[in-house]
Amino acid sequence: MKRGLILHTVVWVVLAVSVVAQLTAQDTPDFSGDWILESTPQSTADIPKALSVRQSLVRTNVRGEPVKPFFKDITVARELANDTRSETYLFGIVGGTVPGLRADGSADGLRTHHRVEWEARTLVIENGSYTGPTRQSGRWAERREVWSLDPGGRLRLEITTGSSVGASSTVTLVYRRQ
Image 1 (cartoon, rainbow, N blue to C red):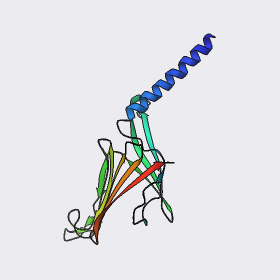
Image 2: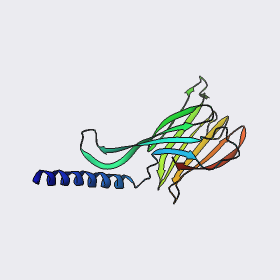
Image 3: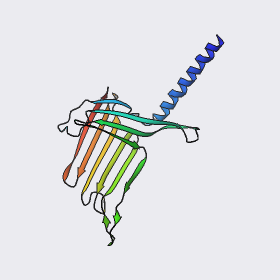
């Protein structure tokens, strides 16, 4: 009887710690799950009809010591009309690349930039490239995704794209959990 009570208590403690860890990590939403497109935009060429999303939750540091739980990265598999693309983004990363220099000191090649950051409870994923001295100069292309959950628990994905060869456009997609 005493052993059963101890086991029961251990199970409840483990469950409580798990729930508290999840709630602590919920300062930012967990988009993990399989999602099906609910809204159908006019242009569907590059619109994922389904998403499979996984966020990695970290609870310990490299030495195995407990830390306040946080999401480290997000892996997104996008099911398109003809294939599936999968990418993993690390949260809090801002960066890019710069080309080498020619003998005359001018840049030789494509510059890139990317950003994956939380803005309150919204996830922003940006990336782009350009050949000029500044963003949106020379030949350029940019993409910005804004991820959020609506009050009904649906995934709202707002995608804005633009380039030097076409007008900017924004599409808002709504996905429901599968």
